[in-house]
Amino acid sequence: QARIARESGRILRPRMVVYPAILLVIASAFFYTLSTKRSSEVKILRAMGLPFTMQKTGEIVSPIRLKITNRTREAKSYSVTPVDAETDEMRIVDQPIQVPAGESVITPLSLISVASDFTGGRRTAALEVSDGEGFTERVEHLLMGPQNRASEARAPGKITDDTVKGPNSYEGKTGG
Image (cartoon, rainbow, N blue to C red; front, side, top):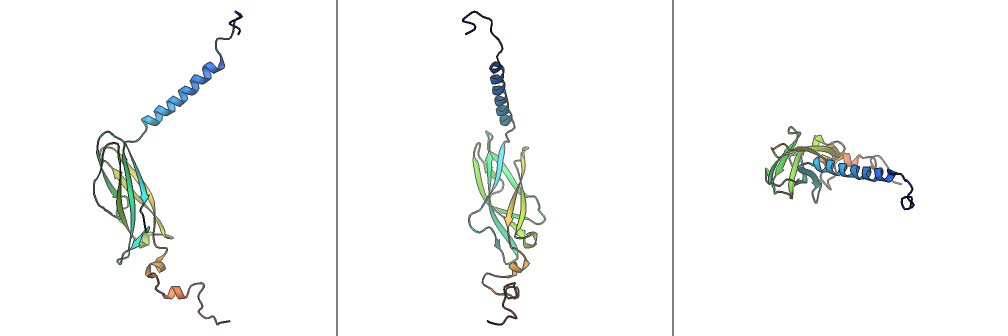
């Protein structure tokens, strides 16, 4: 209204500076996120069914699924290796894993561990996924396993000495 009345007004208003500054910050964050995006993404998913099975040899087999997303414009081949190769073994159907451009592939695999590696029924396993062209990612996953050595020796439904002499046992108690 000051201009209509031909009075001199402020040329530089606060919103003329604040709005472009906010827009600049948002655009910078967008381009930073876009430029730092990795060429691939790796996730470990839980398998359907039992979290682990115990083999007669005492090995613990943990089925998992590995999801690899290829964000490039060309097909890639990914190799998967357990980080702790001394105690971990891995069974996988296809190695290397072929992932078409711009797509995701979910591959089932089994991690085989020694029962003594589990503490309180849990342990962390790590896998390294690499495409051989500069992309390498280490992913960790919490595996479920036997609670302790006594539970390993016990088959389901089988009564052993430690089952009978547990904290709620009736040994030495009389009725009544």
